[in-house]
Image (cartoon, rainbow, N blue to C red; front, side, top):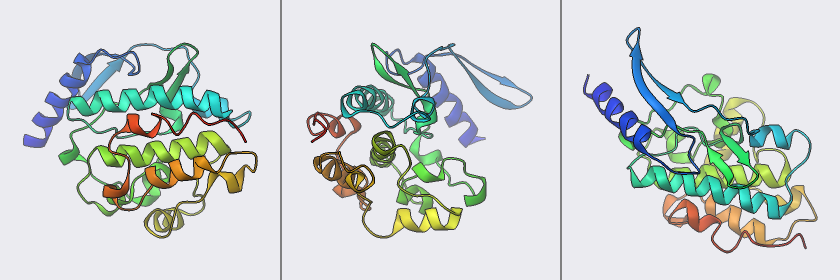
Length: 219
């Protein structure tokens, strides 16, 4: 009951956020003993839909990621962590860039899903997969995975769930420039820091991921 009460308060806080890079949640309610949130209707395509054609050009990627990062940081100011930060939940507005369609959740309520049942496994942080405490830096990791995906067209890790799980936990992240040779190696540095295995080695917030380094031409 306590967890349910905390979640209800968190959803109410989320519904109260008015930020252009967060899809607005108009109402919070309960039906058949389950909480729900009603989002505003949005006609913009998702990043996943755009990537079905081709990877984004760096300038377009910068604009989309800047918007998504602003949405993540807006959640953080309400002490919420993005739960499902994936290309499917980043809507692309020609004017605003990325709009994040994520409820946000109090970090103490985060629980890992069984590997075989987690559709967003490719975007989870190592600490989330281990069932360890999470904070904003978990969202920074997921944003790094989204950046890699936007630049190359595919997530950094694929395969069986257990293989994806292991690769999130072990070794250095792959380099975007190895998947797309025309990319500047500077993007490798950005992705490597955002996806650092140790949260302390990541960017301090989502906005820092796109503050300067991402404004790099294809070289």
